Each structure stands twice: as structure tokens, then as C-alpha cells.
Length: 200
Image (tube, rainbow, N blue to C red; front, side):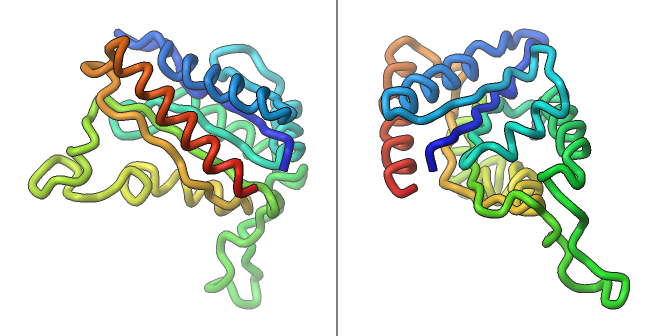
């Protein structure tokens, strides 16, 4: 699996300039290029052509998504990107149907995707500390990022046929983004990339 499509899902909004996810995107490109992967990228803040974006998903062996989390969801431009591109990909390689038949509509929902054989990896960035997801009595009620806020995102990718790779979640990015912690973020994330792509 040598063809990687990397999406920077950040945008400028209020006090957020999208710089952290741009940095993470560059770390990903830097690492994968050093390992001779073929790479295509999209920055959702820039103009793009829907058919070309569909072709990138069809071309890729692995899709890497980078996104901040705003108000416990994807940023609005990134959500619009997914809505528009996946819809444009109907019968063009992303999905054919919801997988059901009229003769037995209760079964096989979510099996009509056309991206089988592809994998995806998600990174998210949070103001929330990691402990908010794990400590009893804290905000996320001991529910992980993947089983909680990002549950629908993972189902979306499963719907079109892609298989989930272990993701990476950056926590306490606003208050904890010191120069020292940025170095630690990069070190830990690079180790994650090495371990993840070694198995492909």
C-alpha cells in the first residue's frame, strides 16, 4: 500500500488559525516521503474540483484525515467537503448504494461502498485533555474519542468500504502547545506513523 491521500481538514475560525493541523499534515508528508510513499494532498481551505477529489479517494490505498474538533464535531468546511465529495462519488468509485435490496430492506445496510481494500487513518486535535476521556466523573464519561464524538465519522468510512487504522488524537493543544510539547507531539506521532505503516 504505497499511495497515500492526505487531507488537511482545518480552517480559520475565531481564534483558530488552523496552524496546528497544517503542522501535523506536514509531519505526515515528511515522514511518508522519507519512506518513498506516493502522496496526494488536499487542503479543504483551498479551491478544489469535486471529480478530482473523488479520483483521489479511488486512487489511494490509504486516506489520512487531519482535523480539529470544534464543538464536538468536524469543522463546518470539512463536513461540507465530505458531504460534497462523497455525494459526487456516487457510482464513481466511492459508493453505489446503501447496500440494501427492496426484497429484504432490513438487512445489509451500509454494504454498498466501493472503496473496499482501502484503509484510513484519523488524527484529531482537541483543547480537551486526554484525562477528560478516561477519568471517572469527567466530561466524556469514560468514552473514547473513537467510540464517542468520532463514532459517526468512523461509520461514514465503513459505509463506503474503508477499513479503520489506529488513529492518533492530540490533546490539550490550546493550553498545552508549548514548544517543548510540540516536540513531544511530533515524536509520539512519528512513532505512531512508523508502527501503523509498518504493518501495511
